[in-house]
Length: 181
Image (cartoon, rainbow, N blue to C red; front, side):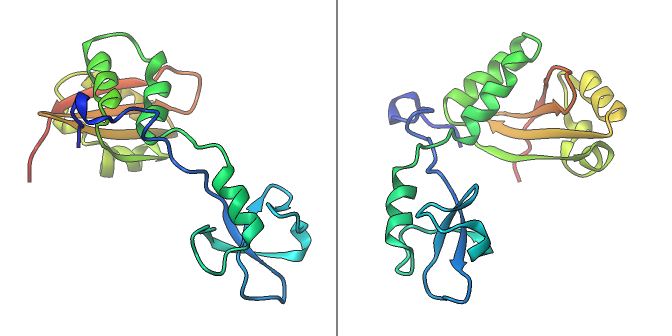
């Protein structure tokens, strides 16, 4: 969804809270801790913690109070729109790129952003056959890369495809008509 310019949406207002993995002091269940690089935010060393495959939730009752306070005080991070906007600054200038950058500044939804084997992404996620602008460069990028990134953004009548090479190549922007279903 694209937001109206007067609704207060901006990169600054859309920043996301920092996130941390969760863990518990080994053999002491019941208190979730926020994981940092070498242990928990409250100072428990890594070797004394069992890590879990979910994120630390500061609002949960079982959250460590020290970890909660530090997690809530941690700096925010850019939203998907801001991260993609920054990544596309190096794309070849042109109307398609400029329209996508403008859409991202308005809060257009980044519906999909992933990376993986280029042939699989081209087949299942890129929608190359529906592109009307930038098609040739996008197809070539998928055909020549082993691994690649892509992001899809919908704005008004357009569906944008950002092609994000993993080498030193410039990102590419293509688009085609948005199909409403």
